[in-house]
Image 1 (cartoon, rainbow, N blue to C red):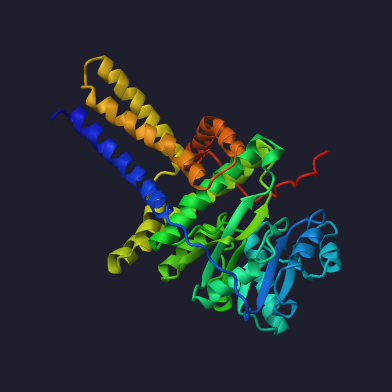
Image 2 (cartoon, helix red, strand yellow):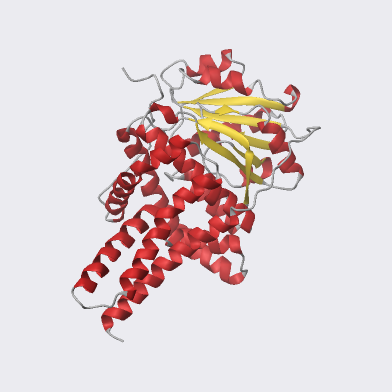
Length: 400
């Protein structure tokens, strides 16, 4: 066996491992189980909303929260107006929330703002069974808390609801983001939950038992505090349950420029989180094997979907060229072609399982551009050429 053939087979095995992990989650997502909301709610919730200069949306968001199909005496809405220079605090208070204004450092940290808000809620002395987190622009399905009440009653400690993009008609990027969330919700969350893994934390529409969130504070120095928290919970044996019936709608960035800043922050922060937790997750899995820990470790070392597709495409093209030059037989290009087709089919399979509307399939026509765009940013991050910090994403209607 030649050195070239050995190298090709090794690379093919690596790509196959990545694809097998994706399709394992897809297989897990085939099974659906409808959850039922609680008929007689018993849990008391503190609804937490971090807000930075959100006067344009926070009032209507709080008003919608106050309309939950849940006993009013069993939930309260709290807002932290974090270093705001507008009327966020006044609008939140007028809409019926208890609002605290924060001026402490560090600035630009959602994790720090939420941790501070929880400290204020605890100091007020009113007991709660769970905290529920929403973004400042989230629109929530009225029975949301009833579904969370039922999940807590079933013994779950951390529950991620279904985050849906509310503005797919606002442009190419919102439509693509909405399609990607449909796929992620099906494969990354439902698939993991069905297989005994831990769902992704989406940063919104998520519920934690009070003791869990008070014990595991967010890493305020992280750009991806939700990923950090997910890994830390996994190391403590706490899985995040996925509850697709509990729905929250949020806006996607309107422009590619806004999306680029948001994506850069995620890529830099997620790379830091993966490097920090890869070793501990592997050691935890070796001590006490479980799918949840193995899946968590694999997430720290496997390539994300977009770079994987680009790498597979480049290797396919290289093997086609080698075959035309007579340096390899036809079997290898055929194998690489199959690998590329499997990756190309993957997102369409997710949309099909979700019974997605036609616009979602049309949005995927931008998929090749997005894959190259995201992979380019990923390469810059890995080379250390791309820096990121938290920057507020403009809301719909705020642009002149």
